[in-house]
Length: 287
Image 1 (cartoon, helix red, strand yellow):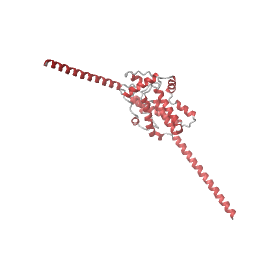
Image 2: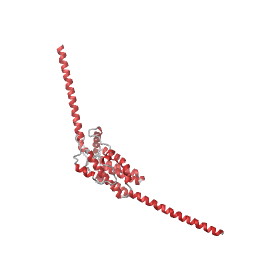
Image 3: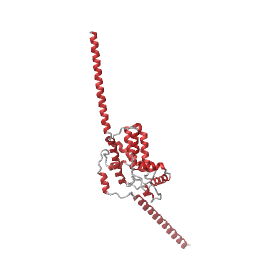
Image 4: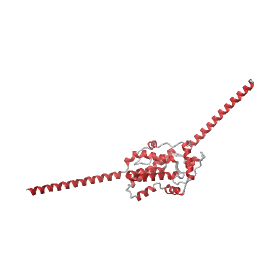
């Protein structure tokens, strides 16, 4: 009986040891896989590439790129539940993708600002294109710089490792890291710029910005969080750089105000002259 109990205890102890060992190995395997998934990037980033972006001369966006990065929320980790949910969402989007989605995507792929240009023309809006396009060009360079700092893999790259294959549309403008979305950056940049000039069109302009942003998500080119990051960053950034925009409009407004004041002074002087003349006439009549 004693020998039986000793053997039983030995087997039990060995079994517990094997179970603990198996759990440790399983945990280590999961951690290795997690670390591997989190290490996946879009591609190699060369120092010369970052140097070119850092040497670009900004006139409107007068913040250092790392100050700007602080305004941008960090992307979710590759191994996170959120990223997995985003991949599943894109998988569903692609399955339900229609001809209209592809048509909008194709229209905006290499011309993110197309819908805004059409809106400006259709509504006969007066825009200082030098100022407007300078702002958009700087946004584009800033976005490229951020993309290579974050170096987030595209959904089609990451999906294969998480068993969520993403068969996105081919994007001629999609040969860069995913985060943040360049199209969403330009769309929301146009919205913020134009709504300051024409607040009566705010709802229509925001709808266009979301259309540009969603055109990339609907065909699997971008995660939802890529576009969200662009919108959040721009809302924070625009408050800091707005002072550097609309200078032509400010000068025009100042000239208009000066002209109004000059005309008012002329009118007042004419009225005073008329009143003085009437007083003189009245006095002469009474004499």
